Image (tube, rainbow, N blue to C red; front, side, top):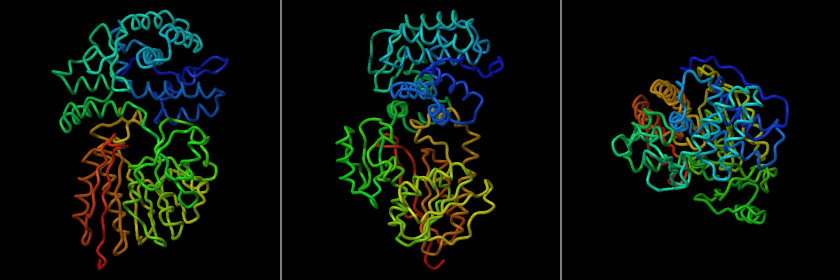
Length: 467
């Protein structure tokens, strides 16, 4: 724990830039339970930035959040003070400068240093400028203009499966301390790194690290009730958006990142943004037209809408969640897509007012550690502990019991997570199924991160028609 008391650093009046927005968001994450991505969304809404600056603010903010452990390991080689004696907001500033120097290719080193020092002045901390300037210039001089493919103690893994060389050792030796190396060089917690090394081995661990440190390819789910996928593909290509058909009849893979609201067909409700592993959950449940369906943990509503689309907007879908703000996103999303069969209901966090049922089909997309989608949730990697893994698995079992208790005879339930941890997946399902008569596990799917999309888990459970 840092001995310096945290405080909110304001940015003095003046034009906002990508870096001021980034720095403010990063400082706020230290005192907020919200992810940087959510804080960034709000900051960008109120900032008057060009599209290029919005992209830069996004890259810097999420990049620092994602590679925080790696940046700390790098900075430790150039900061002579004890970490606890450096003000947290100053350390954030150094992380931001170090990220630009190490991980970006379009920002010259002198610009990265100068802009970071200028940011210290804008934050009303001119006394930081000399220290920040010295640390970042020393770091800049240590960088080599050399990129290699093989990770080593003196190289930093980048997004494109190459590594940036330094003139000194930064990390533990991967040959003798593979898990410790992975933790520091790729930016994951030590416990998670050790777990994954034991499960997957070093080569697969490296592949996972590169995948989870790279922004994922975006996928669209075509709303087939409104448009044919080929029509949407043609309109995307005509607008200069590179795209190709995905694995499912409704899925489209984009080749680059573009503002979703500016894509053709967004306002008309022609598509939603959703990864193929997430699409697989609703497809596995395969609700029938006219069925009564319950999406237990529905917000923000991507899978809810997919269920309604698969049902041809015929039947009833009840979407429940504990967060009224996020539940409203289910409503607005379904309105944009033109879906009429979805109703929402707020439930208590303790599950005290769950709907009575029975339901023909239930989707339980359970809260989890998100370890299969860490490329989308940069800070989640820093929040996975033995304690919260145990807490989540307890909650997951309780939710699964509640769902099975309300499943009609002959009904189907899909248990889904975006985790790759057995304690949240196979172990939860195996334990709870033994508590119920007439429940059969008939399909189980593990999605491995990067092969080809997000990681996660889904299990299809059936209740006997006579139960």
